[in-house]
Image (tube, rainbow over all chains, first blue to last red; front, side):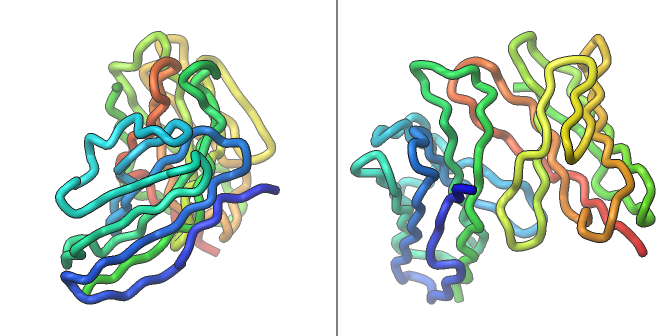
Length: 119
Length: 111
């Protein structure tokens, strides 16, 4: 069964350093999402891509976070500089949903996540 | 988007049927009810989705009354491996299909 790949699985960094996370969605999935999950909470959407375009980044702290999906396939989420409060699980998900079609019922498939610890 | 309310936690013994109820009073006509499961240190996994009445798959059943203001996820004969957090979400059938997660229900299965 096809899966969403993420790397690294774990990352420890010091505050003020830069970190980057990578996601490879399921082949053919046009929509890609990045979520942040703080311990004990549900995932929170950071950014949504449709192919290479950002559909929604309203919850992305743009002063320090950036995301790109240059060729509409894999994606990178970057934090620079990292702060203590950024410690969390960062999840990537993909879906076959497309704004030009689909029923809206398409499942989102999540990767295993990257657990970030900022010291 | 309709807000959901579900119990914070539940305990069950192995072999029992577990029912987790979620309320979503402001659900809209185009909205679907979706449940995800999340094990520790893993991403959420889709379990089941429905619009009304009853939906059943190999993992669970989903019961939705006619007014659609609540739904019940039913897990038959749970095992220790069903210990996880279960999220109830209301998903719009139009627009950008975003998922808004609450805190979910932490189910603990006891031997």
